[in-house]
Amino acid sequence: MDLKKIFRNNQNWVQDKLDLDANYFNNLSKVQHPEILYIGCSDSRVPPEDIMGVSCGEAFVLRNIANVVPNSDLSSMSVIDYAVSHLKVNHIVICGHYYCGAVKAAIQSTDLGVLNPWLKNIRDVYLLHKIELNAINDEENRYKRLVELNVLEQCVNVIKIGEVQKAYRDRGMSVHGWVYDIHSGLLIDLKIDVASILKHVREIYRFE
Image (cartoon, rainbow, N blue to C red):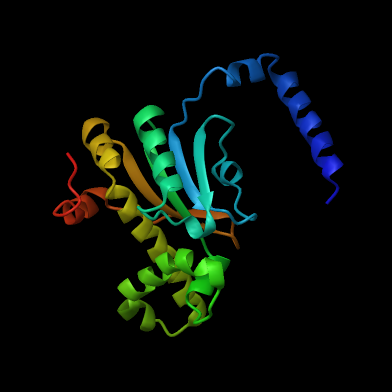
């Protein structure tokens, strides 16, 4: 890749924005009011703003390998706290994608060195749902179902967070689980039942 081309592309992008609105960057620099916190995979084939059709300033974004949200991860917790407590987002979206390399790696019994602690989060999802997953004979369908279940369990991790529980109670902020289908380009809503999950976790994770 010619990195000089990136800067030429950037200049063209700036000019395109200014041609539509001469004050575009002045207005953009003042403040951000995103409605959505998007937590997704770092995979280069899954550009958040593009697949959602949103513009700069409309989504606060956190990306990592396999869209995992461990409660022990300071980066994830800091982003969520800032988005919920300061930006006052109305939606948290955890978005996985089919044909995720990290999910596939997690279900293989291979020592991947420094990646092992991170992939442990996905392997734990497999163990939690192994009866359902092992009953799926087709390997590709089992792999895709693990992608969905990983999204579900990351939603559960988010709902365990005190700030999220308070925002849900006080202003109706919602949590969503989506999967991006790379083959079709479409987003699939897993229709996460926040109230049901909250009822289940609050016996131990109650922070109100």
